[in-house]
Image (cartoon, rainbow, N blue to C red):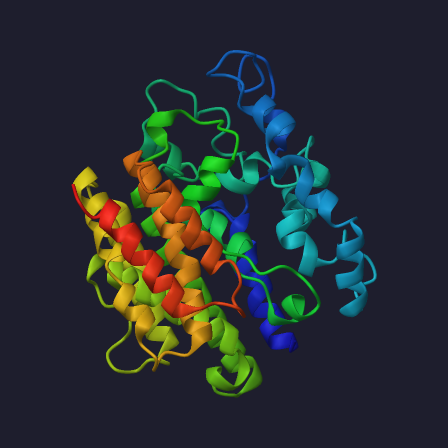
Amino acid sequence: MSKTFCSYLFAALLLAIAPVRADDSLAKYWGANSCASSSCHGGGGMKQNQFLTWSIKDFHSQRPPATLTSARSKQIAETLEINEPTADARCTTCHAPLHGVPANLRGEHFKISEGVSCESCHGPAEKWLRSHTRKDYTRADRTAAGMRDLQSLYVRANTCVACHQVVSPALLKAGHPELIFELDGQSCAEPKHWSAEKNGNGAQAWLVGQAVALREMSWQLTQIHSANELSPRMTETNLLDRIYALSWLLSKATDQQLTPGTMAEDFEGRQRLADAFAREKSDSVWSNQMTHDCLARLADVASDFRDENIRPSLHARRAERLVLAFDRLLAAENNHQADAELNQLFKLAQSIPDFEPKAFAAALQKFAAIVSVK
């Protein structure tokens, strides 16, 4: 991996811990213990147990930095000639992001060993910690003080996507697993330390998250292109398939075109379109009918998988995203009528090299017959 692309990637991943507002860049990180008193977020009550939930149950607390000591991480590090993965920015940016906080911004109780902690998601606490619980403080007041507005699905997706989607080609070739960002599914899997009313609509979260994922993958390909001075198609066919598959999915789900004009490889244009799409959907008022419309449109794509002009690897990537979409949209509807058919689709889509488009299309027709009627 070129030094140029490595620097681009490192800058992007730092978004996971960077303050939202430019003038908050000097705010200090006070550490998770600043949230942990029993009268704040370290109490036993349902509305005061956020620190306990994170520190005891949430995989973000201990698992990310611990992963860097595993045999697999050591093997990846050896391939990339990384002496110590627990201290190298290519690894710690996501697995131990507080390593990236400059010494002058570390408060008295700051600990780099906290993993992905409170301030990794909510922003450095110095300027909002004492004020954010005031009853007269509005959501806008907290955001103005530098606290991330995670009720916004767009902001929430941006906070998570860098570490849950973007993996450099060098890391992938060295054995790092490929990642798929899924805002709603990953939020549901996380132990809740927030109230249900702040969670947002699951289908809307899914859609915003997918658009942000498309933006990030498009951005990544532009950086690979720039660093290698080669055309995108010559560098990352796998990433191209993932981008085209996700563009297809979002276009099918919403009838909005996310390919910039006729220029399929205009990835800067695609990046801008995806970001505008994510903002728009995050700000929209979502309805149950909108969820069902997305589901019905996506269920009605069996003919796409019979198109023999589409290469099998792209068909497989489309199916990969499609079954995950069905899972979240059906969950949003609390619809379990097609569970068996969805399980069959997952089974058919689980292997990219062995994917059979026609078999998937046949199974998809059975699925559509159940879920499209309302």
